[in-house]
Length: 212
Length: 296
Image 1 (spheres, chains in turn yellow, purple):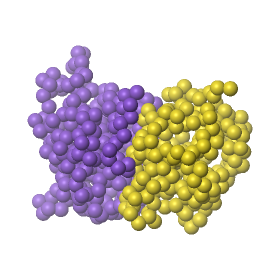
Image 2: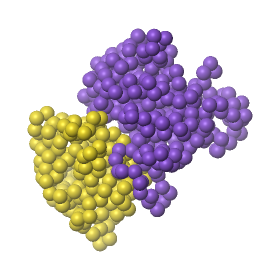
Image 3: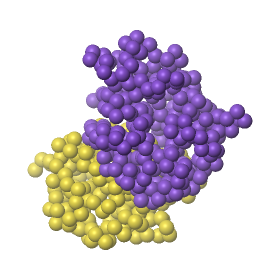
Image 4: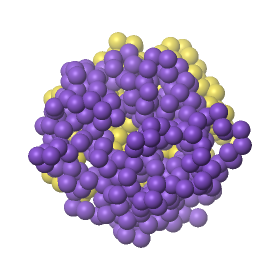
């Protein structure tokens, strides 16, 4: 069972629908025990960073998330779920994130060549070659550079360690990090559950049963 | 085989099929004729998804309380089989309506009447559900004096609200996106209203999707090639008739409504029906960045 972490920030059902379509058993839950005993976990999310951190705090989910990532079981962050992993966000002054990935979350609005915000629609990803990938847990095994995924966001992540960056994407003149991969932790700015068949492939390959 | 786009990698234009829904049916309004029933929306939706639709837009054109259940069922069915963003509009009046639409499986909601009557709804909804969830639909009709006014109820209700002022206002209130319809052009196949589009796109810095008037491939290429920065197009007539020509088995369909039109295989004279694959091929040939779906 894959735990879809419910911290009251929407878009849970589309993730569940996608997993169900793939025949992967999942449960939407905020229950710490259920989450910790799950075979994998997803942190989805749409909305404001600060609000999300507040919810995670009040639901006592912060440490469980960190523990889950440490457990080595597959953990996927989507959209806001990626941003929350970072150390801090530019939103409303500076707000602390989970600090699992070193780096910051910044606003598109502050970038000089970007006029239209949010960044909405299909954009392509470039896979970074210097990625060291765990054998057997490559969510992008069926994804080639140039594939399009669905984005909708006003902020983007800036990881400090280049080695954490899995894919980049270009919006106007800015090349930003569109996904990170750190061992069992994969998180994308784009929505795999809304990116058609290619997105489903990412979910399938990340949560499939691994050969022992 | 992956065909890597020769165009520089960046945000693609969005082609969004728009389906007008009445109860369980896909319909299309025809000038002076009312609504024609075209078939089952889930069939069209699946076809469009497979052909590379970037998103789907369902507009409930009746939007009465009685129709809500079948709409939610349709949304739910769609969300379980079609994995691209779905926007739902028509009769969405309250925070609860939005919540219900999202729970059923919609990713975004489109509001028009309720937003003009109570602009504060945009702010509240944006705060509760996230800005990117809230789309404001603007239906524009050109006035004799040259300016454009926003209407509601498929262009029937006068509001007196000027379009560019309203567009700017919706952005300030927290709308994530605008869907701009030219009521004058809709269903005519005579092309988009470039003047209207430029006027609105220039005063907002949120994505604008345009709707109303597409009749042939060239219209789509033109609107994306123009200097005006638009995020996507919402199209209906140009796609629906193509699907019908190809796939409709009309046996036993009499009870659904006026099907003489369907039988005759004729479409509106200005509409050169086509499909999404052809549309995207054409756009790529014109150096317009878009996403192609490949057979696996």
